[in-house]
Image (cartoon, rainbow, N blue to C red; front, side, top):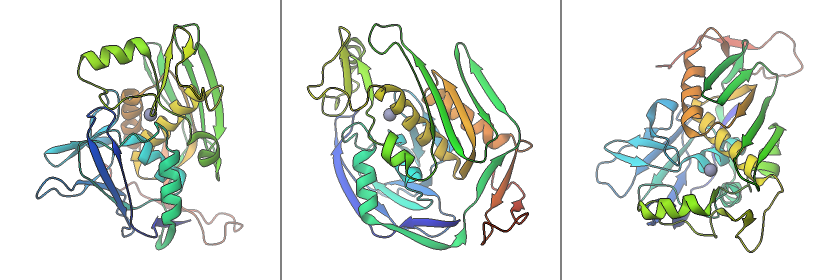
Amino acid sequence: MFQTTVNNKVSFKGVGLHSGDDISVTISPAFPETGIMFRRSDVTGSEYTKASPHTVSSTQLATTINCGHEHIGTIEHLMAALYGLGIDNALVDVTGPEIPILDGSALPLVKLIDQAGVRQLNKKRKYLKFKKRIRLEKGDKWIELIPSRFFKVTFGISFDDNFVQEQKAFFNLSDNVFVDQIASARTFGFKKDVDALWNMGLARGGSLDNAVVIDNDEVMNPGGLRYENEFVRHKILDLVGDISLLGYRIYGHIRAFKSGHLLNNIFAKTLLESTNCYSIIELPDHPAAPNTILELKPQGIS
Ligand SMILES: [Zn+2]
């Protein structure tokens, strides 16, 4: 029920999926109410920018935020790892234009942040508790939130191929479920799409070490898949990362079909703006005590 931050500073480095650059990242403890803030430490005078649905500047291939006059891309796996481990506040320094892709999942990030430890802060956490259903549709894609006493996700994907085809999964993301069931699912793509990206000078850091690649109805990676439905699990990972930009813990069941970073981001903005559909609450000191949930007025929403 209290806000948290990382207990110790922790660093990692790796290649950027889209730039191909070698990039270092340092995650440091932060005060309560900071949120997750990013800074380009390779740029003189760069200041911390809070990750929020409104600071997102691009959703093409990854979620990118504006950071002063610069950008930081591929933040979604790190954001998901922080949310999944219950980290509310942190300062993230990045020496390049994106967060390194590592193995394409959030697992290395979860392990690293777990090593740093979680520090409880002397300030109550704020939760969004939804009272009404909110739904967005775009073509055949849709995403909706249904009120729930838990944070749950149901996700469906449908690809016009003979291998991935259709996958659907449901998780109640309470406790350690994100860490145990979602974090290790890797990003994925089809060989023909990867070739097209390379021809456009994109995905320069992409390899079988950091993405599942499908070609001729087979997985090209020598180790195969981590889960039979690794693809839909990764879509849930991305969704958790994108929705975590709200900056609050969430009580609600998100159901999505074929949603991606763009629709996730529009949905996150829509959720924040739907102030008649939710309350901002703090949990009581003694959870067993009835009727003591403190409702706060929506604040800091723009
Ligand atoms: Zn992803």
